[in-house]
Image (cartoon, rainbow, N blue to C red; front, side, top):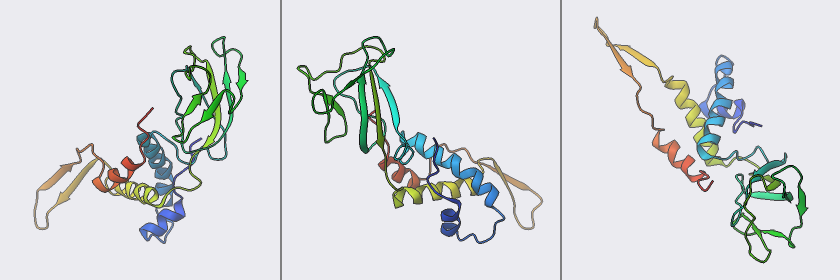
Length: 189
């Protein structure tokens, strides 16, 4: 799906950019930075709020969907033939969505049968809007990539005939960005 976490206008306002000179560069970076943040956090935040997401899983004690918070579950289906045909299970009879956001069977054992492709969940999930602190981290990350093109920087001291070359070799995110992104990481899947 790939919805962007910020817009060009939001970034330009944040950065104090008034001219359209850098619009092409910024527009090319926004989806890349948005994708990076989604990959880092292992969730999409806004992609599945108005589009249904379908996940197939193989059973176990409980199932915790990848996206959260869950807005609504459209269907939970069970297959005895490894995903060839599915039969819909009934909410509050066969399963329940508990307060921690995982799907739990309410049959005698409370355990999903374990077999490949045995369950299919279709649901809506995510945030209605990107939180302000996350938007700020995305904008700071975009600024970081605009300023540090992660290549070679050459500087020449005034009055000097020598050139000093600095290689950007760190693989860490700036600490202020990492702190915010770490708050949103989905680390249970």
